[in-house]
Image (cartoon, rainbow, N blue to C red; front, side, top):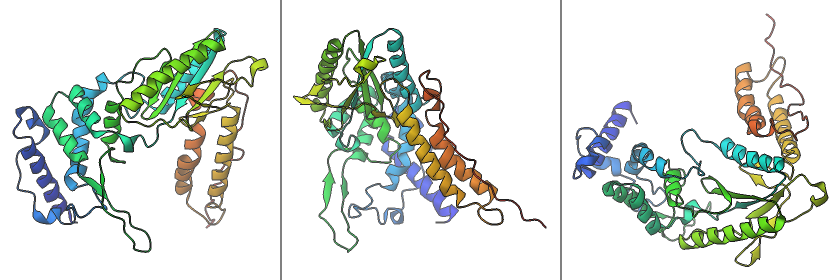
Length: 367
């Protein structure tokens, strides 16, 4: 598509959005002045029969616009515990908060119990009617809410195999589109009213965790069981599925005599699996926060990637220095430095080398 055609396409989409909100004066700021009618050739291949691509050009174009308009209104209403896809927040923040609370309990000589919740296909099981209700509660403009719900409706798909077979047409009655810039925000709105618990909550989108610190293990287990009952009831009400097989518990303390102590936490009469070093947002958290197992996994990953990059380098052949530098930063440094502020400051961490050898760079040929 030429630059002129692309410009005409964007202008036409702008006009379509403008006409959609023209009936509401409060939405005039969403679009600029009217433009020509959306040409018919633009919609070719994007009819209801094209089920392999449920995203229409209008939907793809307007989602960034909606996100920028909705985010300032919704963000103040989201709980502080939810950091998923929010401006100025990251996974490192959540891991730091959780580990710092555990470190504080070590100083207070308290016992800590943590439950890491796993939701089955969280984005795909969002109940549209429930989302509609929560959008009306958080977004004051009903026209914008209606437009969002129209984008989520009438979505369908067909499964095609490599041998040419096709499945029947299936309608998607739940869920938000994977990969859309608007989906994380919609999911945050959907679970923004998680009930309060005695345990402290940590959330990054659908990665949820609760932590409770008490002086005795019985008090920890009792509190976690009560809080899990509250959260399980909430998830059932809003048709989100808690995977009891993947939801795990963990204990944190510095008493070596109770190193094998397991928590007894149940949901719907099913005891949750207890893990000695569960993974939260990509970081292994062992009982004493020594990060030994986590650093061993990181070192193995870094070593494998260094070996891969080494094959691209040579004294008289191979990739250029610039290519090696970019590849090293993307593959090696990203893995080695992830959540480094968390484990590097821990007093329980022993020295561990993450880069056994430097990555060679090709030498220039002598003239």
